[in-house]
Length: 226
Image (cartoon, rainbow, N blue to C red; front, side, top):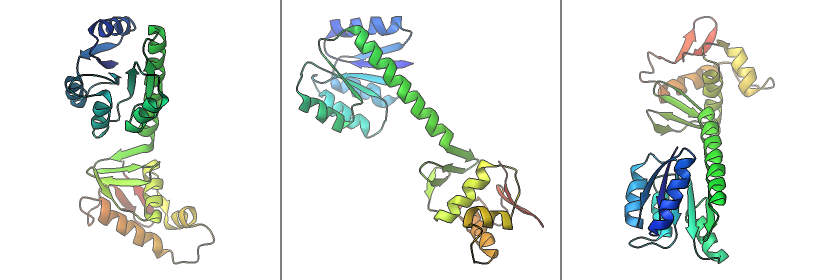
């Protein structure tokens, strides 16, 4: 994993770099806020260690600007012990704080813990996202996308596409879909299913008249071709 260390204390930076590289991390460094922000915004880092007080741009300013474009985990370093500074830092988007002077073992432990949380979060987000061609759905946020652009679906429309995309190739009869999505006590017409499938094709398929993903199996029902 790749870590960026931003601090104007060059001796401290060298010590942090040496110890983190001994742990197997790749480490890049910057000695002022402006240089650090430019490097961080370029991307490719798994974690940023950021001093609070620096020339050109403060750590808070760097943190705030970085949060506009990135969710990379950030550990703030500060010589201040005032809790208000930490609260402000968290409000600006910092994930953790280490107060100077610190034991390098503490910093390494916090780095490991934050990277572990970040990895688990990324894995969970990846599992909640299902993609096929131009169509993507985020099951946790209940959002749908076509070519990366948000597509507004009704609750029932999302229920239908989520069920089909989670079970690609499985054919659901109209009766199955009606019972699973709407419930056994639904009093409406079975054509409700056809209407929702038609709307989904209109919103998500490249050419709704010739669907590539939301497929009809004639005489049986519908399935998703993943």
